[in-house]
Length: 271
Ligand code: NDP
Image (cartoon, rainbow, N blue to C red; front, side, top):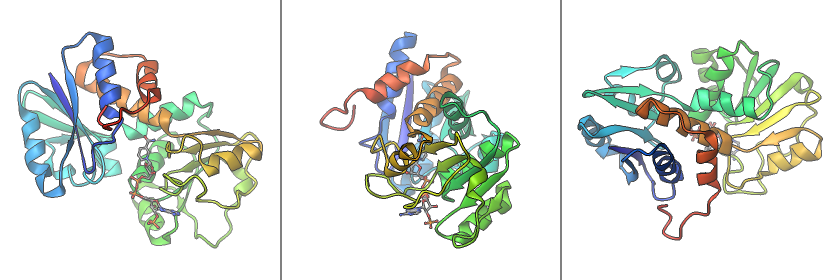
């Protein structure tokens, strides 16, 4: 059996390490391969997933939105968020799912979030859409703050929550969960989406979806101010575990995925 990642670029993805470790753990004769797929080749690559020995695929940048019309069916999460990160193949039928959203909630739960209290999401791209949809499904008050205000307005119009104007008052003291779903801090240890971290609710959790570097400036600032802080590795592992479950109907412990992420990347970057 086979499963794939379609992305551009794809070479440095950690998904092959996670899924091949999970296949081994489950004793399944299957292989996961990352393929660089250019936007104009996505339709053909997706059509190839209908072959009998294919379990499905993950989609990453820049394909998560473009894949929607190529699916035979969509899960409610994928339809509402407007992004597919997991394609499930069964008997020639391709179902588009979004495991980023439930994977994010599972990672929050593991990090000690109690699923209550006001959440503030930084960013308004694909990751923010998954986060807002997930948090709204918990019935929480959700604020969205993005560098480009119009995108925050469009996101909240689609998914609920309240867009916060960048220069306006936020009410930071009631924020029990701060989520960085922007790319600020990615590969930039000194960059923060909030260079002056405001005072949050006591015991607040700061969840940074960025996982490279493992400790971002936002996380450092949060810990220095006495808040809990986690990086995005938990979410990365949880979304993979949920995709694996959907493809194989097998559950593999999250530690298998986390351990694969903890191993150093091989020099050729393909793991
Ligand atoms: P998008 O490109 O769709 O969105 C990027 C967002 O970041 C936009 O809202 C953009 O604002 C904002 N942004 C970019 N640079 C800055 C900056 N310097 N300061 C403030 N805001 C900035 O990306 P995604 O939504 O797909 O991904 C966002 C992040 O989440 C990435 O770092 C990605 O690696 C991470 N991620 C982690 C996952 C995990 O499993 N842990 C899963 C998915 C994503 P604007 O609208 O103004 O351009």
